[in-house]
Structures are given as structure tokens and as C-alpha cells.
Image (cartoon, rainbow, N blue to C red):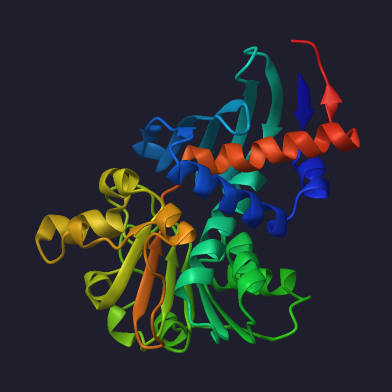
Length: 325
């Protein structure tokens, strides 16, 4: 079995690679070439933590995978990472277990990449400003993906703990545009062409009333029915809401489940899935006035798309450690 660390994966695989590979996997999914059972979530309420078990098989890659990712938000106080994960990759011809690789970076990368794909289709062509709400583990790859698909001139950062936003700004020192740490989340959202929400909040993080026409929102932080980053006003102002999968959204996307349960909005109003958007089966942005929202709770075939590609690159370039198990 090949063991691949985060550092080794980073040396092999970029955001550009991930966006390209995920666009291909979205096409395969729309063609019915992906086996993707619903994931299992184990909650640990006393720690406000979760463990997610995500199986998948992709016929076109000849591989299956199981990802296990844990999210323990209190870990930083113990000097440990909030999000930790591994992917076990197997061969669908022989059943051989091919590799075990770090999944924390790949999870952040693929989540950013799918937001980048959604942004490419839903954000204004001339979008130039981004508000990043929540500057934790997911935020860097979210912003990186947006920078891949739009010419961004200004980035506004907001985090409840200001020092996190300041640290994020330091890591983005190579960005050519203006970076501002904001103290008012609504001010940041009101000035942005693109809003990125990557928090674990259980209550809305900004007011939908401040959104200006033409805004696109990527919501990736909340992934359980009781979590809600985006308020009902935002949902009602959106002309198009796209999700990674309808089934996942119905089961896990609190941003959508909560307004559906109160009766102010219906899940039948969803515009469609990301695979449909990427393949052109549903329309993307049609004018510069509409407000759009991409909601992602994550799905296993996103993981296998990047994991299989990383494995193939690692074999080609002789990267990784071989072990007998």
C-alpha cells in the first residue's frame, strides 16, 4: 500500500488540477457512472464534533474509496487540527487496497474546487471583490478557487476572532490586490460581488438585507440540519440556488432545511445540482442583477476524483511510502 502525506500531496497536486478533475467527475456523475451511497455522520454533541464516513466508487477511474473525516472544533486549544481525515483508495478490478492518504488538505482543496466551478457559472464575469466570512480551515482554498476563475481586486476578511482574520491576511501576502480585515460582517457582505461563508455557525452570519444586486454566495461551512450560515431573507432573494446534490441538501443543508420547515421557501425551488450546471443542463447566471447561491454539504465522489488523480500522479512520479499491512 502507498502512504501519502499532506506535504507529498501538496507537492503533486494543485487547485488548477482539482478544478479540472472535478469538472470531469461532475460529467461522469451526470452520466450515471458514479456509485455514491449516502454518507454516515456520527455526532458527538458534548464536543460539538462530528465524524463523517463517505464511501464511493467511480467506474471511469476503476477505483473505490472511503473517506473518514473528523471535525473537532475545540482541538486548536489542545494544539491539534480541527479537521482530520484519511482516504482509503481501492482497485475495483481486484479489490486491492492501493493507498491511504491524508484527506484533510484534499477535503479543503476539493471543496474549494467545487465552489470555484460554481463561481465560474454563477458569479458575474466582472466580479472583482470577495468577502470571506469565517477565516478557519476551509477559507484559504475557498478563496484560492475563486481567484482561479475570476479577476479579483479586493478581498475583505471577517472572523469573530479578529486575530484569525489577521493571520489569514498574512498568509495571503502574495495576493496582488487589496486585503482588508473587517470588523462589521454586514459591511463586508454589502460590498462584495462574491461572498464566501465557511463557518460552523448555527445562526446566520450576515443579514440578507445588505446584499446588493448581482452578488454570488458560496456556502460551505454548515453541513448539518441545525446549522445555518445564510438567513431566510438571503434564500428568498436568490434567483438561483444550486446544490452539490439535492438528496444531500434535503438531508443536511440547514441553510435550506430551516426555511423549508418554516414554510417560507420550498426545496422544490432549487435550481438544480452542480453536475447539471457544469454540464450545461441548467442555466448559470443570466444577468448582472440576480443573486445566486451555491450550497455544498460535500459528497464522496468529489473525494475519489481528486484521490484517484493524486494516486496516479504519485505512481508516475515515484512519490509516497510503500508499506506492507
